[in-house]
Length: 461
Image 1 (spheres, rainbow, N blue to C red):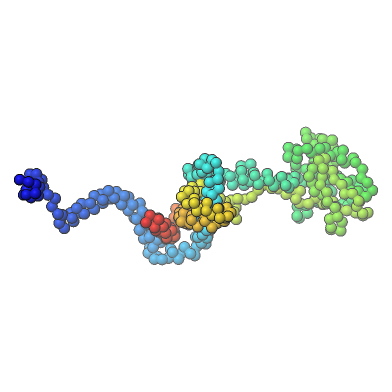
Image 2 (spheres, one colour; image 1 turned 90 degrees about the horizontal axis):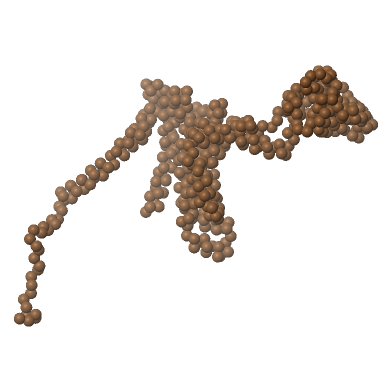
């Protein structure tokens, strides 16, 4: 039998014992889905329980507690929320929080952008990023203590005031004698403005000796010389000469009102020659305390030592005073978070299409034009995420404000988070008002969080 006339073979038989898969009906499909949901719920349940215990329950309890009075026994409705906007301390916290929201995220985003762009051109970029990011490893408590010491008003303790005083004394004469005073027998009278004037007058061709006490020999400026030789120099016919000296002999002895050999001049003193209430000459004492007014017209003159001679020495800036405490704390916050902003923006910068930047440079665009017209627009999504994240973080700032701000200016620096704690537990003992502040803080944070989540979902789609 040939192949052409061979009978057609039927379909191949399946081996015995083979079971065909049966189509899943609706009941079976439902059971499968239900089983998968139960399995997913079993995995998610611990996280949901934890979330409910630590987030949902406290939020609901705070909302309920904010509707009662300080003792939690009398229902006051929205009274606590009305009090939030009538209490001066709370209004100060709202204003300070607004300053934080506007200033801190803006500066951090700008600094992070500038540093991220500049770091790309640095050879040791990774090491620089590591150094900038290191403050993130420091707790807010430790950072607050560091900056509390750095902002100390005493230049011997506060590094910032030590630097400010050093720069000031470089350009301005720091010689002053705040403890100096004249004896009643010296012919000097103290005015209401703190200056000293001679009770008598002096004419050209005469010499005046002005003695002071109250200055410790160890506090004399370096290079001060004995004043006796200067007192013996005669004055010319049209000149008034004099010497300002320390009327005190180390070890005792000497004669009051008379310059002795061991008594030092007071250098750096400003002396003015006054006539008819007007200053006609000004001089500064030399190392031996001597001064001179040459070419004076004939007549009588009064010698005046201005009050700046006796003013306290410049001690820097009151960083933690009422006026600067909030900017000072924001400065500490910038130190901690600048590295965070730089690293995130740097990550976005590294993902930019290099061919676009190179094409712009090939077309003749300068670095500033490339930065402003290409880099920043392309980085806009990253910058927005960084900014919103920092806004959320700023709204919750507590540690730095509470630690850095001294007690007397705590109210001037307070923000919503610290005010919530102070009202509830820091002496106010009003959990109703504190809960209202907590709810207000939550309402301010939620929109920023929702915006960030939506932005993240759009970037993933």
